[in-house]
Image 1 (cartoon, rainbow, N blue to C red):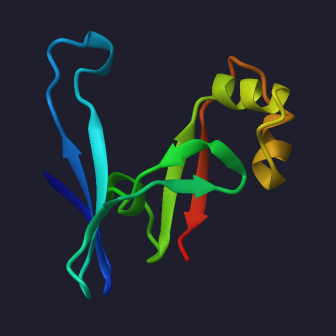
Image 2 (image 1 turned 90 degrees about the vertical axis):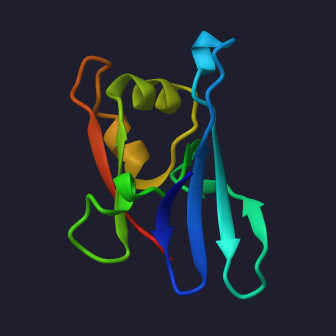
Image 3 (image 1 turned 60 degrees about the horizontal axis):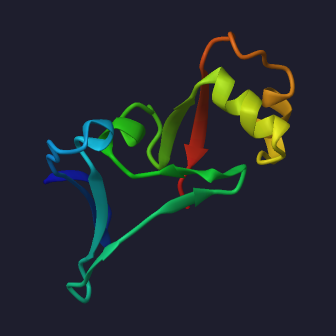
Length: 115
C-alpha cells in the first residue's frame, strides 16, 4: 500500500498487486480514497477536462514534483497527444499544443491546479 496524498479531508492511496499470470498487467493498481470524516474507503478516478480519455491518480509523483502547493504535473508522450488530437479527444490548451506536435517530438509536461 502506498499513501500518495493527504489533505485535511482525505487520504489518497494506491494498492499495487502482483499478477504473475499476466505479463502485460503484472502490477495492476487500484486507487482508493479514505474519507477521514466518515471512515469510508472508495475507489476513485480523476478525469481531466482537457483530455477526458486520460486518467490520473493522485500520487506523490504527480504532486511533489511541483514547487507550488495545490499543483501537480503530468507527462504526455507526443505521439499520444497527436493521436488523441486526430481523434478529436482533446480540448482547451492541450488541444492547441497537440495541434503543433509531431509524433517524434519531446514529451509534454502539463501543470495542473487541483481544486
